Length: 571
Ligand SMILES: Nc1ncnc2c1ncn2[C@@H]1O[C@H](COP(=O)(O)OP(=O)(O)OP(=O)(O)O)[C@@H](O)[C@H]1O
Image 1 (cartoon, rainbow, N blue to C red):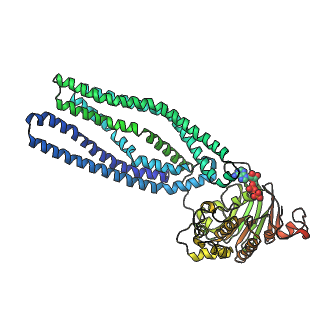
Image 2: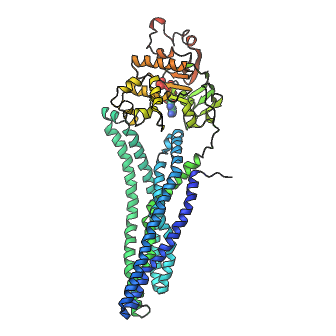
Image 3: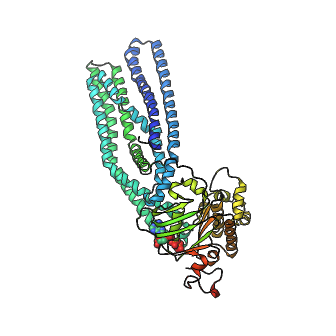
């Protein structure tokens, strides 16, 4: 049996809403007859009989029915808005997860726009777009009534509706391509500006503003040109359809007057026919007016279907017992997402609880690439990474994350307070847990010295604290929740000697607690703490064994004792 994804399920639940929208639309459209019927009665009956009582009664009935009409419109919009919220609730988490996964797997795919696609689709469903479509089936009914008045009136109205519809189709064909291109250029420009603005300080300091602005403005201009192209094409058609609508109102009254003079219809029918034609053309007009929204919603629907198709729902994974920190890596080959060119080739090693391993090697050796695979961010091309015997892919990613401590090279903190960052933004976390992690990371005192302590807002990317402070908070975040395996990618790159000393103490304490630790570092002070060392060069494992054995016999890697100061660099 084919399992439906959350998007298909959400669309399915929308069907019942669609049904009630159709029911509402039926009654609302039936009430559209109130206006023409009222005019017919007033012109052909009341004006002849001059009965004020009849006029008052008719008017009261008409007003009462129009009140029902207003009430139903209000109810319909309430039902749709609520359904829209439900639709959003059903898919937004799924979309967010897929955007994260897709961005990891194919960063160039710009999956983040799927998040605004949810709004676009919801707005279409809850706004006038869907209502316009539900009203379209009424067009033939209203036209039929026009024919009942007189075939000539029916034909004028039908031709009018056909011309307006044909203009809308022509509009779609002529603007589809430039509008899609404009959307593509617009997204590229937005993506570029979003990522560029994250580095405003460098832009200003290095005088890069002009060149980057030039790049952005070229993308922005391309979007505008395509949009202008679409608007140019649509402009002529829009004014033609406006003219057609106005001309039709005149023509129908003219045709009605002609038929009234000829005695074929009553003057009341002439006015009623004009109103009826207005009703018949209204949904056509609405569909034409909503066309852009409709096209946008269709594109959003396609993109969302695609992202759900490409990244199917992952079945519930069997919950594995908490790991002790036994990591084994076997013949690992790793390539970055979307590539088959390996950056890591044939790496094998193991780390046990209570053991620390240092990963060393020159710049570009593949140390961070290895770490990305070890934390499950990059998938191995072949080989295996096992945590307590279970391959990383067999873990639920969130579950795995709780047992992993990871400090990336660039730290990557998020806008929020220090406490929120240390607690990995989990809700309902005990403050003591946060403080314990900070104490273990030797960051407690530093945090206390900040203006608002643990409640200090650190801004986007943690820019409001220093690089060294970021690294200490990042370490506290890595060890929050007492993970079994802790992987630190150059954790001391921004630390002063006091910070390095604190880091060494933290690592020693974590080791004593039985944590398995992997540290990437260029600094001897940290490598010396490791029980074993893995030497990487050009993505390959050059050596692996007890730190003393790996570093001592090779003077090229471990300099002579006279130079072996704590802070010297290796590799
Ligand atoms: N996302 C990526 N896509 C393609 N190639 C990448 C990607 N990330 C890294 N590389 C390449 O992989 C190689 C290893 O990079 P990596 O960051 O793993 O090195 P490293 O040993 O951590 O270096 P450093 O000590 O300077 O941090 C480099 O040649 C780099 O260009």
